[in-house]
Length: 160
Image (tube, rainbow, N blue to C red):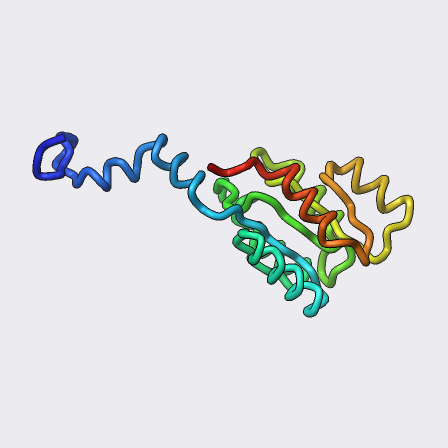
């Protein structure tokens, strides 16, 4: 690097070179808040969970339906983009597409984030299907927020 703050590589500012290197991308990823994509069709439940998780230090993006969730994750399937969320929390029964269908699709994607399912209809078959498809956890509503927090601590690596 020269004294003027530019690198020897094509005269680019040092900050630009550092920002585009792979090691720096890893460093930036370690400093950002863990990202959660939360799909829940019940507005009050979605707002409650999003607020609690933001207070806990997570960046939360909400989806009000299975279709909205699919719209948010679609580019990762079709465009080969790297997932920019660390975990998906999804209700099982939602309009348009349910959480189990979305989980089945995500498990086919390399680098897909872990999926935590929540449901008010947690019969034995739903639990078996969720486990078979690779859900990290299926929480039955009403669930204790501390249970969700414990699952998140388990699946998200600690950040420095």
